[in-house]
Image (cartoon, rainbow over all chains, first blue to last red):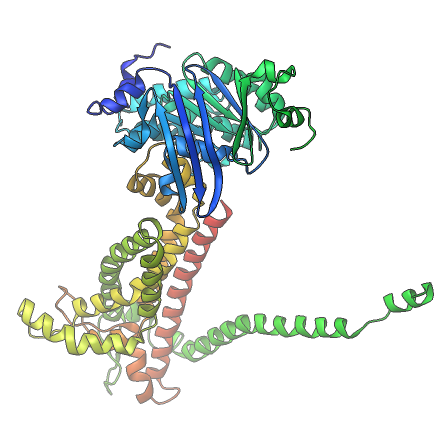
Length: 275
Length: 305
């Protein structure tokens, strides 16, 4: 199946230079001195990290270490979260996201997969067609193409092609999570953020999704927050270890797992002494 | 505590057991009383209306004639067609008024407002819902009536328009409350997912929340319709209470409920007129029962999916 590349471009807002630059390539992200607070509680303090283009960047660490809050800051979801306050500097392809006027465009260029599968209470088709529709596309033929392509890339097409009009929220957990990925792909993202995607998914589906991610990294940057240390080892090029709101260490994944660590706490966590 | 004592204790009923049994039976009685009452009411109305339903007056006349003249001594007429038209036209207009208002208010409260605004609005709407219907009727009589006469240059201000507006305003707060519950029942993770995809507030509401809540919203509307059919006092005061099939919203009408309220006190118990009023009661009972039941089934459908 041949898909014209122009389909993709119609999703973006041609008026916005911001959007064009975001869409120019997979994202490169620089985070400088990022601090996140909820009221008086500091969730994340003074984090510095760089995420390269086309990299799978793993983030590991026990609960409450600020991993999810980092993701929320990256697509500026903090603005709708009451009490959440972000200070510091986040640059995407060199541009400070604080100055993005079209926050919706920013979010459309970032796909998010949540821990629990969220099949929206729409049909399977509409679940995947939602993002293009939000971008103003209503051409049924083009939508058909996008939906099929995204479902295929999420390895879900064969299972749902005969029930595109049944409710997405009625699929099984593993199917819904792949539907979520298909939905994220329909945004043609330059960055895909996955937040502990395998928490509610069976091992077989987890492995299938991991294979998908390996394919997707050719086209986009991927941030993989995971509670499974071995998953980070299987997928991530580099891995950051977060602990209690602090970014303890960032390193090439294979180095971390072969004992070349700077910090004893990383070693302890990786070897399963806590967490 | 030795072994024998443990044995004795565990095989004896103690005070807690009796209290537990007592409370269980008490709440069972309270629970079943609702069912007993509703069946009792149904039987009472049916018993009183049966004589009329199977009496000398044929049903085709009751439902086919538009003349309601029960006090005519020679040839009383018991046609309720005009009364049905009255109730239906007032309720219909009321829904046209109430649906946009209540759904709009519910969407604003649930999706767009926050903090103090939301809390204040919710309290105010609860207050509105608590205004007695006779007060609404009074507003219809003393405020809307002259207003309609002045604005539209019609001889009478007590008509379908007046009653429809009053009834719409009465039903809107309750519908708002239920519709807001339906919107609140949509899990936040749906909103979050749509938000992460770059949807604006309105897009989230329109494309995700409303489709997810559509059954609950339909239930809210149906309950409003049920309220419209059953409302008596305000309708009695604001419709003009004249038997009439309305040609326009400026015609006076008479509602089924208002007819019972106004005439039951003046009839001789057991008379044909008395039975006819109870037959209207059965008719209303069946209609509101069907409406409420379908509303309930629809709302229940939401929770299961």
